[in-house]
Length: 193
Image (cartoon, rainbow, N blue to C red):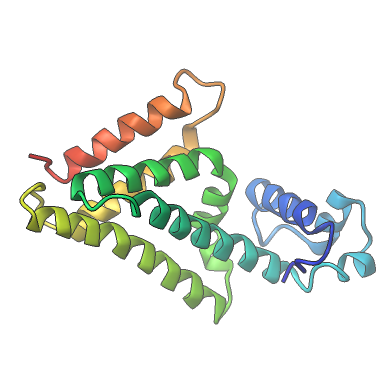
């Protein structure tokens, strides 16, 4: 793991994220990571146990952050429509602000070894279930008309993940405009009445 007590852990994580995004996990070496932060191998290993541990920290950290943002977004209302709107907004906003994490999280799942792969897959399943349960609650309350809550949840999740590929802060649309429009797309996906 990236050792939390290390004052350079954030710098190492950021460098690894950049290298994994540009080169891919397999093509990135510990020497590359060391060079990116100005350290030689032995010094780097004082802060990082392995390249795999850095990848695990990035991927689990991303999923834990998404879950926390989701819980915070839905905590202050019981209205199913508002809960789904807020959850979608949090999901889209995270992906607009953390494009590299989204890219690495989607592309490098194959590079995780066990038991880390199962851990990340479990967090992903939990995150999807959060959206599915919101959709099911809205359908049961008569707000949504949707044939498959699972399919709708995956479609909504894809909205945010896809955003990571094209969104830029200096682009045509502001983050707030994209977040709002995507929340409206999500409500259409579930057939808001």
